[in-house]
Length: 120
Image (cartoon, rainbow, N blue to C red; front, side):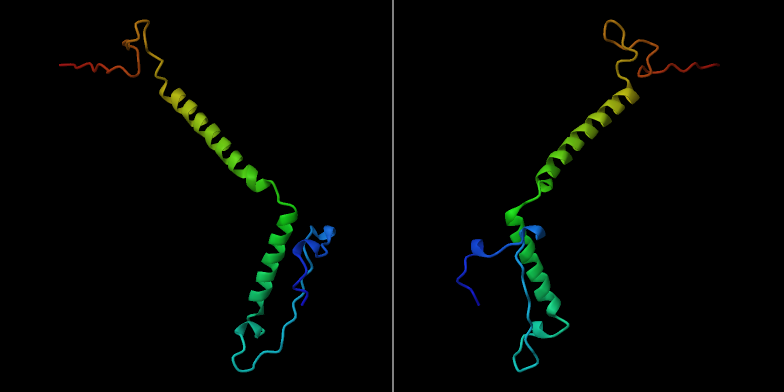
């Protein structure tokens, strides 16, 4: 089975991203106490596991940098959007409008209590 060969010594194809070439041979099932994975309807489980193994072996050679960059991009977007919302709220409320030189609200301010004229 060549089980004594080290993983580093196995030939890798650089044109395929350094993924090892795997081959699957299925034995004839249907005998007593045979695994259901040998049935034609369940062979996809073994092939999917083999494909995941090949992908994880390929990542050992080269790992993409996008998973490392995504959290940084995410938090930068959160900070920028939070600052944008804060600026938008400040311009909607405009707390500086109507403050006099003394720092108190004057009569023209939108925030000052309005006077309702009553007619008798």
